[in-house]
Image (cartoon, rainbow, N blue to C red; front, side):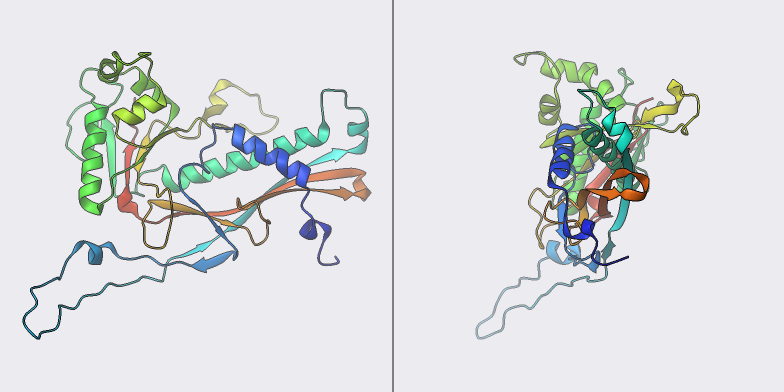
Amino acid sequence: MPQPTQGDVHVNAPLTNISVAFIQNQTDFIASTVFPNIPVMKQSDRYFTYPKEYWFRTEAALRGVSAESAGSGYAIDNTPSYYCDVWAVHKDVDDQIRANTDNPLDADRDSTLFVTQQLLLKRDLDWAASYFVSGIWGQDQVGASTSISYPSNTYFWDDYTNGDPMLDISKASTSMQKATGFRPNVLVLGPEVYSALRNHPKVLDRIKYTQRGIVTTELLAALFDVDRIVIANAVKNTGAEGQTQTSSNYSFVFGKSALLLYSNPTPSILTPSAGYTFTWTGLFGGLGMGMRINRFRLEWLKSDRVEGEMSYNMKVIAPELGWFFSAIVQ
């Protein structure tokens, strides 16, 4: 095949714009909203980290007359690396199908949205597998009904008699700040956890004198002393194509858990973050999202192909900046 191909030298701007607009409107998908996006020109490379122990110890000492000042220093770890895999999916638009499509249907637009939905769901599934599971973060705290032993477990947040989510999150925030110098600023909730918090008597008691008396994510963020609360509403279908579809095939991507973390709002070389998402822009152009939508002709099939690609790597940067509440509701 001749190189470069048309897909390499031209990205279909109208279709890409449709797809980008769809990303912005689909708040159920959270993979692009929690951690900073780090655009990278190379598919793989190394990055630097600064071990925290050097920055939380002082060796400043009294200086004597005609004496040198106390010396100190810090180490740099240049071994961490990333590799941005490429994920792709396509939908072919047959000439006959397009010619017979009635308004308001639009085969090219609908195929673009379908392909985008496929990619967004894949990315959220990867985000959940990378970050929203036990064994990743500095602390896992499991929901329980009895035999509570802090910080290994705590009462279920939908146990409205014993559960105290505000106290749990406050303790976790203070512990994280004590260990890292950074207080968490984002709380990611599965939908069922969000529902439990919105109906918790202790939460309702705190907000009953507010202007509307209705629990919102903004009110919860203020109660839990974080900048943002992110509700992960994405739904997945585990049934195979052609299989009889039942309600049991469908479930939330993010289960009955919660993740409290520090996400750097302005990432830089000297400031930490619980995680980063590296997106490869060298192949995908200037959107800065590691994504592109192409449309190209398949003459032998008498069809146009709408193809979407994404390239990213989700990395845990500082596990001590995350606190995972696992299966925190029943």
